[in-house]
Amino acid sequence: MKSKDRNARLAAERRGRRGELLASIMLMLKGYRILGRRVRSRFGEIDLIARSPAGILCFVEVKARTAGETALDSVSMHQQMRIGRAAELYLAQRPQLGAKGVRFDLVTVAARRLPQHFPAAWQPEAWGSTRL
Image (tube, rainbow, N blue to C red; front, side, top):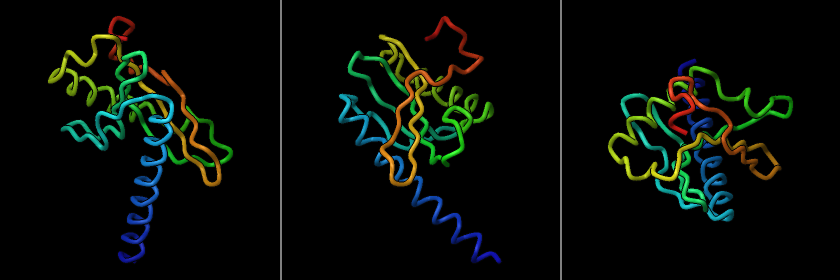
């Protein structure tokens, strides 16, 4: 049983890495500059950190998606709060990066489909409108 669990985790890890790679490529083709991949903090991991062509700092969550699932439903409120806290810590260490604004994007990846980018997909509650 443990071998099955381990194999499932490894498969999910491979899908996640592949999804993040596809999301990175798609964002770069749109003119984004990738600043970080799988950025870890004590609050959790941020899949991608990118600068938009307009200079906005984007914290990007990458999600594998099923056909019936809506994009925003794929990121739970708990995940949004965790990513928000991790982003806040990241910015506290690099305040100059947020000078032109900050937003939270979502990229969904599904089999046999191009990745979909949802700019400003959510805003963590704790951030309020003053930070974005």
